[in-house]
Structure formats: structure tokens, C-alpha cells
Image 1 (cartoon, helix red, strand yellow):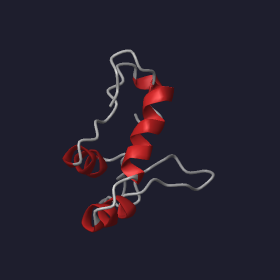
Image 2 (cartoon, rainbow, N blue to C red):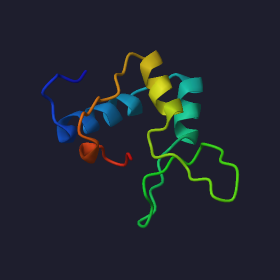
Image 3 (cartoon, rainbow, N blue to C red):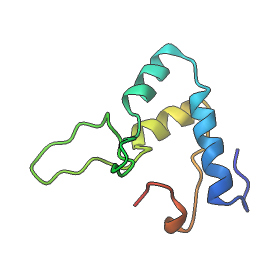
Image 4 (cartoon, rainbow, N blue to C red):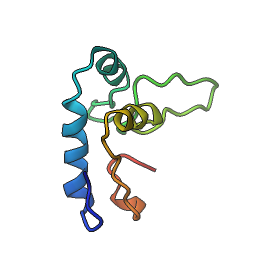
Length: 90
């Protein structure tokens, strides 16, 4: 899916489009549950991951669950070497 010289701005939309194309009912339910925070002041956090504890923070989207579902459908998570290019990732 992603080439070795593909930039974050090219690979990220392809990853999201591929996820949106998954129609398996169980996978779709999991992906819909683990959606990104879309609030204007949101940080792109996963809304489906349960968190525990006073200082717990939700993981950024895509969480490990989304990446795992993507992999089951042959969708490769873009491997950006420069963390600053990750949209919504720490």
C-alpha cells in the first residue's frame, strides 16, 4: 500500500480510505467503536479504548485495535520514520 518514499501526506489518506472501505460487519463495528475524536478541540484520540485511573490518557487514533483490524484486511499502517509527520500520533 505504501511505498518506501511515500510521504505522510500521501500515505495517511490512503490508509484512512482503505479503512473506510472495510465492509465486514464485525470489523466495521469495531472500527466504528474505535473512531477518532472529531471535536474541534479534540486531539485525535481513540474514543473506543477503555482507560482506567485518574491520570490515564486515551491513545491517539489509530489505536492498536484499529491497526490490528487493518492488518487482518491487508491494510498496512504507514511506517513513518519521522514521528513529527504522524498525523495525530505521539
